[in-house]
Length: 214
Image (cartoon, rainbow, N blue to C red; front, side):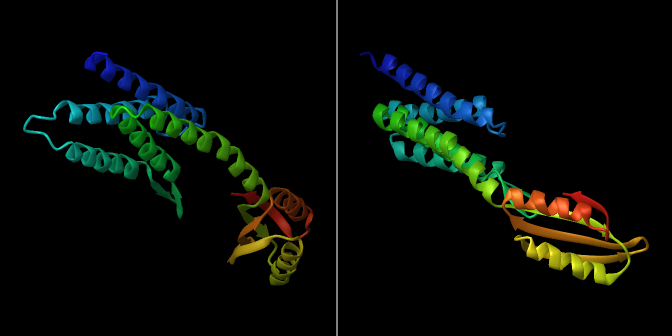
């Protein structure tokens, strides 16, 4: 097979691999979606091919280009990570970018079996574990409530006893006195059905003037 045809097959394989992984990202409406993953995989494969293509020239050290791919992909991954209200968002996207680039490098080096297996395994992790995470989230989630009470401090104590006896874990509890009465901000962790049951109890409580789930 002519070398140029072989290189084109490697690039085509990288595009297909990026499309498979990018499909899952697009399906879940992630920042790095279909086109992004295709281009990352394609670009990593192209740079790897170029590092092989330039052997025998003054740029004969192929490891230098591979190292720069890793550095560049790390920069892209860092840009996908966001800190928002105390939470870190985008770690999975950053890890996916890292994995997609390595798959592109595998295809660029002509390692079709490794690249194909890595593509399948990455897709399995993204597709399969997404359902597992949703299942775990349904078992135990963290929810915040903003509750307005009447002005009696005893009502806050009574409400706390009711909440703790409902089987949820109180992570934080803050009571603020305002002109209209008391404002209670709580953060709780529990299975989603218990949180829904607690919300109904709060709605029925005579001390609760309003409740907002945030």
